[in-house]
Length: 45
Image 1 (cartoon, rainbow, N blue to C red):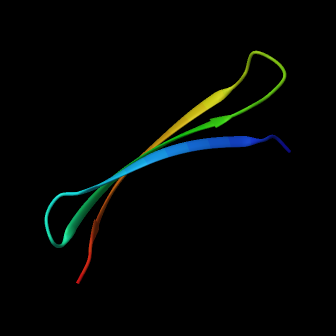
Image 2: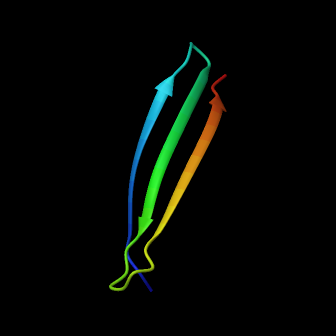
């Protein structure tokens, strides 16, 4: 089991559409840290 640190940003494009970007890092105590980038879109109705 390894810790996960994340930070994200969400942007309201207009009254209905949203965009989101999240960056996550799997933290280890050796040189194999991993980065994960998630990009998403959403529609609010």
